[in-house]
Amino acid sequence: MPSFAATVDITHLPGILDPQGATIDRALPALGYTNVTQVRVGKSIRLTVDAESEAAARAQVDEMCHRLLANPVIEAFSISITVEGER
Amino acid sequence: MRVGVVQFPGTNCELDVMRVVEALGGDAELLFHSDASIGSVDAVIVPGGFAHGDYLRAGAIARFSPMMDAVAEFAHSGGPVVGICNGFQVLCEAGLLPGALQKNAGLKFVCRTVEVRVETTTTVLTNQATVGQILRVPINHFEGNYVCDDRTLDALRTEERIVVRYVANPNGSLDDIAGVCNEARNVVGLMPHPERASDPLLGSDDGLVMLRSLFASVVPA
Image (cartoon, rainbow over all chains, first blue to last red; front, side):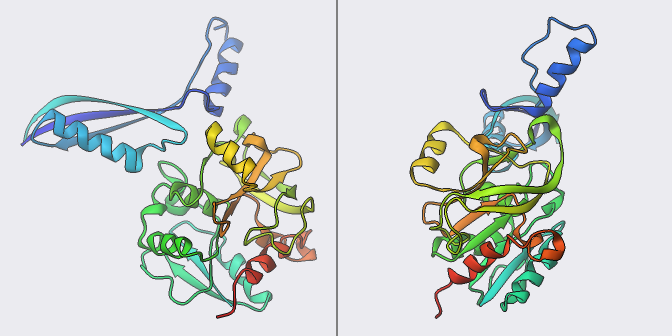
């Protein structure tokens, strides 16, 4: 069965306060980076999925995101998948 | 009156809660996370701590424990359920309460006694209090910053489901929310710790009215 490398990128929903992003947003200008705005901090989760097809792998990771990996009340997620090989 | 107190790996307020329940004349029973039944308890408290290390998100792993299925079933049948601090986070993740709790504004861990105002008395945690009553109760959290979408906030306001508000917002919480309840008003979650305000020796016994309310919410069988 082919295996796929999936990366789940989790970010705060637009409009939801991101305290970590806000703190970095304040720290960067102090270092001279005065042209930086809109800093957002998220999470990246990487996993390997054995599945029949890329579509099947994506569907399963999407389900994992809805059930566990992300909280839809405050977070948005995106999934990217690449073929890792056969195993 | 039997109160079940849920214990996950990482829970750390269960003994404090049990002690207060017993001081008020109730029986307290520990409910272990991997058990799938709440037994014959009349009410359930999900206490504070760091269930499953708060990994991924506070409450995210705990909600999938067998015990939480049993607690959800009890809640859906009208049983009184209270989540304190981490317990509030667990109930939100489990979908028993709306919204979510995220990192405090300013990224400060806040540990101090704060004032909260009782906003409604038609819940299992406030039926012995009065509207507008100010209670001094400790908070102790890094993720107590309540958020929800606008539609949910409108519903919470119009249905008077904001149970307690901070007098001075300590964490950036939306609309100063310190605690909310579900539509049926039998499930309440709050960040302050009423069990830590249960004796004048602790600096306040204002939390007792909440626990007495929980007792009063149980209809004798």
